[in-house]
Length: 125
Image 1 (cartoon, rainbow, N blue to C red):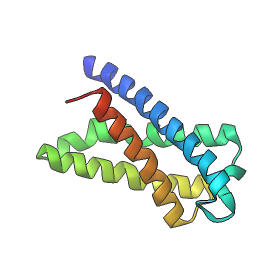
Image 2: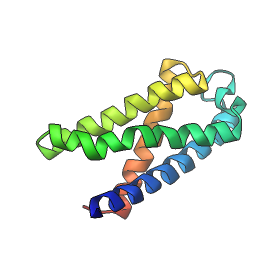
Image 3: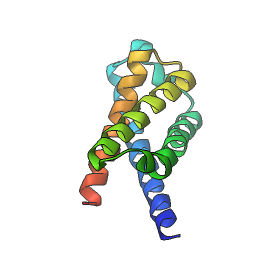
Image 4: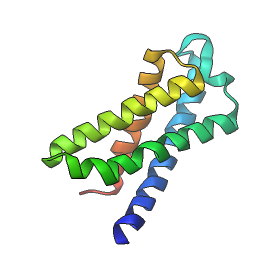
């Protein structure tokens, strides 16, 4: 049961980190126009928040409960897990936000990079 509690804390941390990064990205994208026609600015806020939270809810259980048991050594697991989360979330963002492939990959990469870096800073292994 202890591992599941740590997972839930990790999930909450990931959602908050990626939401924060996503909101900042959206604000900058709307002002600076990273993507065509400032596409993220046209997404309703409630949908924006729900989609980012759902992306983590859909990928993190695989990263915590499935991949560690099929991948070894640890460095292989970590690389594959991050690639998995990044690319699966990119597909989800492309579908939900109507992003082009490149836009979805960039958006997902930024959000996942922020959560990984903050995770390493706050929860040193």
